[in-house]
Amino acid sequence: MIEDGVLDNYQPTFIQQSARATGLNVELQAGKVAMPDDPAGIKALLQFLNESRYNGPLSGQAFVTNSQRRV
View 1 (cartoon, helix red, strand yellow):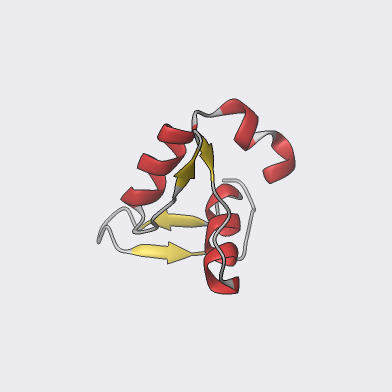
View 2 (view 1 turned 90 degrees about the vertical axis):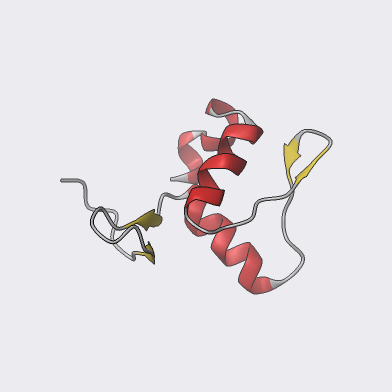
């Protein structure tokens, strides 16, 4: 979760590159992750930071999950 220190534990450029791999564009401002202006963009960024966005292992297609159950 975001409370787990994602923004403290990962470099903004790594977050940006990882998000791009799921089809999400993360903007950086002054070397920090910038919060989007629109509600849909905010939701997508928070889902990514919460590790709720991922690429399917077979198709490579980007998905959003509502479960945080670990396997």
